Image (cartoon, rainbow, N blue to C red; front, side):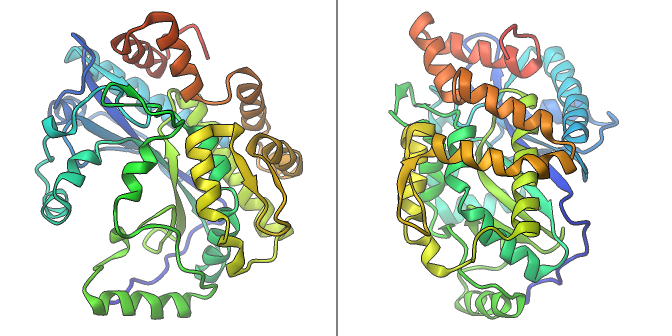
Length: 376
């Protein structure tokens, strides 16, 4: 099977996908409500789309192609509000968060769709354990070679994005000690991790053809990489973020990635090299485990500093690019969250410390997602 041609897209445009938890309003556990929710949503005019996910207690919303932070937030607001109205009619709750704090994977049901059934047949119980919730951000690229260079440039900042977006400290009723436990489930898949270090589309086609010849993959969907090319959209797709608890946070993270992409594309602040990936797995683990307090090993110098320190330096470098993209409010949001709590995982632990009840955590997450909570 050959790889489709890389589509034309406008550079630095964005598309955002968010996977959401569907919970009941009794004990706030996950509930198989996606079919009913999609039925109620049928015919509702949206700027993007709402689709099922691999298990039927999940749903995914997506924006259309967006140019700016403001446009992403506007589109997410329209879709969020429509989803919340529909969920209210069904007495369901919707929540962000990378994992549900106490659901049991064995109780989940695979959504009746051929692609999902195929995944279930291949990966067995891992498919139900894939009831996890992430934010994916697409960035438009001028062409396939530029996409690969941007992919590898952004890889340096994968730990920073994990730490900022982390919202999954609890799994199966336990505090895992991680800020993002969700990614541990992704790592279980054999084709997860990082993309191969190739810088031209011709070389990537050679790699893809070798992989398809083995029968291991059939399409780009079979790669669960942290960042992957999406040739049918003319984008790269950043896949490491936990679903935030608010659309404001989701929009800010998307605009941060857009600003990083402009900086990397315009200023080329780092020469790309295979050796940049030597500390990659270590840095990623540190971000998952410790959030912004995790250690970051600079791939060029070998210097050790916290992710928080490196991110502060990065945000300063991004200021002119955020200004050009009208994304200054997004960077202000990120800075304020870093000063206040760091990420949603820290907020969730604070709620549990006060309330001593995971059910109450999910209830408050639903209120935050619906835009009805007093806290940001």
